[in-house]
Length: 324
Ligand code: FE2
Image (cartoon, rainbow, N blue to C red; front, side, top):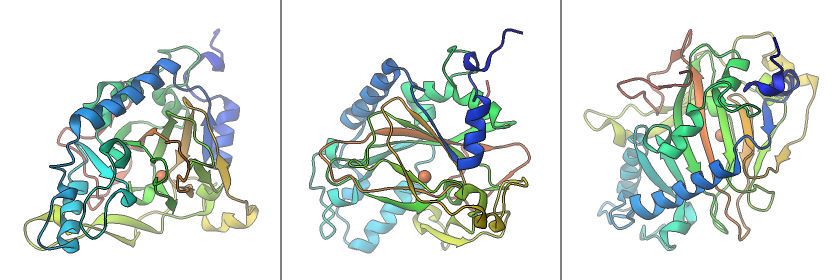
């Protein structure tokens, strides 16, 4: 009694209907101004205190040339699931020499993938429980609205998309990278700065989550004996289920409505919820303004199989519970 949906921390009926129809949902003011400030401060602190470009493996001179650098880069990426590591903008690095040609604050594209455990300010975002902050949605409340039984946070990233050199992200579906059988990934994407067409906001193909299958997925390449992490990754055909369970999904749903890509311009503090089958992308940042965002992903642990060939493997204690 007295429980109205705008006081709960989950999605309202119309928000849920919108997410099911479009495969994404924009929720303005999901983070308070103070939280946004604290997350930006933490991002800058990590760059300042935790990153030393002179010892960063991607910038180390390697006698094997570009090939060797690739292997080092693969290992650095594949080992990042339970660490805080820094990934550079492609255009911040001289492809010949491997030398970083920008100051570090301007060179990093992404910080990942264990912020939700190792950074207190970022961990606080996914740790908010239902009804903790009346009037605001929380990840746990949203997951409950979406029907998650045991959602687990499996990765998190601050993505900086630097002024002038911030790289484009081609159309993709997150469940190709975070595959469960059946697919269950949902992305929580929070703008920490205003995202506009100029600085490379998200773009969506509305409704594509209902007809676009997870046809392939990213796996760890089966390397020879020994150094598994240096084997890198590859895309392979997906032999498992290609859609979440449900009548609304299927490749035959495509005929219903063919829609145009939609740009998702949002203010700082906004949450964008992204279905794991949804086709989405972002353009290059050619403006003078950065575009810092925080994103983490959840999967359903109960009744799904987490694929053992996924690039990201659970830490010993398992992926982080979203429900307290
Ligand atoms: Fe994505």
